[in-house]
Amino acid sequence: MADRRGEVVLVGGGPGDPDLLTVGGLRALRQADVVLYDHLAPLACLEETRPDALLVDVAKIPGGRQVSQEEINRLLVEHARTGAMVVRLKGGDPFVLGRGSEEWLACAEAGVPVRVIPGVSSAIAGPELAGIPLTHRGLSQNFAVVSGHVGPGHPASTVDWDALATGSGTIVVLMGVTNLGAICAGLVERGLAPDTPAAVVANATTPDQQVVRGTVATLPDLAAQAGIRPPALTVIGAVVGLDLASP
Image (tube, rainbow, N blue to C red):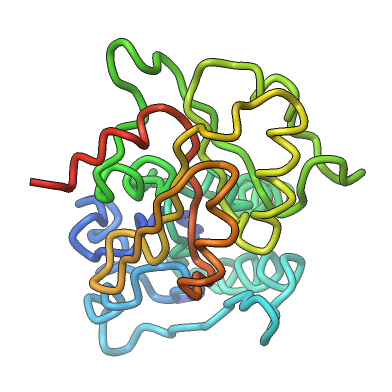
């Protein structure tokens, strides 16, 4: 492989259901010499890779084995410099709270050709397949997607929680299971009505999908009682009350 120029392809694998991988993403997987994947990627799609492809698990498992972002960046560059076509298979979309832009920059700074194949974001597909449209005429004309890695009041948070609490749009929180109580309480403290409909969608788009519905005030306890664990997303707003999944 050393006689040809390598490249890195950042592939958005979608929210979990293998059927939601794009045609372009599937083509890239079938052509790849090396695939770096994590636990949020649709692992069933790895069956589409060539028998001689090198598959590298770079998962960052909460509370478990961790592969640093710096190490992932190093591996992308190292394999591409051998002349390999390297696919970085990620869950959702690479540029939606997925550190895909960091990987892009690391490759570009190293002089490695890099391109991106967008994926279906769980922020949209998860609520949708749980029967929750993010916008609906007369209820919501906009939505915001935010990280719940840290909650309101945490010095590391750059989210404008005040604007979210007083706005009229739908709120989608990714990576917010651990801080769900703090997030809901923080929104109420900032002006959001406690009876605002809210839901948690765990393992969205997969056969294990689990949906818990309530209000901003009740959702943290309901999610805890249901044993909700990551990966899960939270949807807050009037559209949650539609419940399109019901007949």
